Image (cartoon, rainbow, N blue to C red; front, side, top):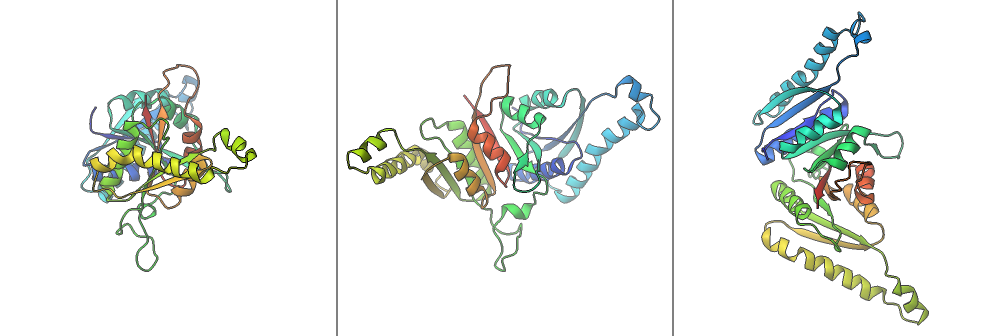
Length: 301
């Protein structure tokens, strides 16, 4: 795999935010950034139109990645930035490009009100099928948003990073997802907050009927399980400070809540090599659409 971060670039505010995030991540990883612009050829009848001819269309499609790259080079002088254009269906081109990259970064835009964020059909298709980590960045995301406020309570990119949050299923923990989260926390010199949500087992009701409330025992067991799962990772990454949150209830809700104070949220997605349909998973899907911070979706077997 080539050590490159690729950004899906279309000139929208969300893709520009994605490019800025990718440049900051590239500086942490010391890798180059590639801005990939996918354009679909103009149908022949439109190509003959005076205001949207083939030459005009080509001019604008070339201008988008070129101007974005020029801006990134000015703001991130230590990062190598390249551009590439490919013709075709955006989702298919991005998936093909993702085969030889370290990270793929896409934008998503905010919905009106409190409904969350819109991950379009292209983004959802790519997340559901890519086998490399995909990071979704919100329109308007700023570097200062990922850092703790300064002593005066003002957002600043000069302070330390907010925690990285990892959503972990203790019943089926995956090494790829856990490693990604620990490495992201280490790069940022940030705390790693590991969140797991769980439901009360069926026997809980019968215990209550028998006059016994095992809730406290269950809470201790779940917390102990999380600690045991993370033990080898704490040893492997001793420089990363880890906090554990084992909570009763929806893991998606707990992750969305934790995202408010995070620099990055990491969730896993099981690879399903079925050519039909979009398979992301309920937790990853909810976090993608409602977390207010960049979300990394890491595929695993």
